[in-house]
Image (cartoon, rainbow, N blue to C red; front, side, top):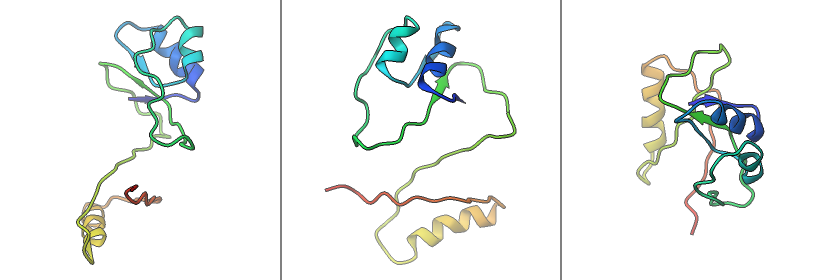
Length: 104
């Protein structure tokens, strides 16, 4: 995956190379002549979109790279601490965390 600064730029990058797809707006896809495979993919209308270009070649490091992970834990005391200990034991800094409790 390669981050892109906007939906338009992600679509432009996808249009420039065969076999590459982008997650972005329908308008950006139309402007760059791309086929829209799925619409309204968010599960929350107030979501924040992050942009990626997906392809077969690995992205080069930019020096400003970020990685996001998502996981669930058992609903028991200490479960989150156990997960975070894995980061600590491997010398991984996690400067930000977000909690998104299960929706009912």
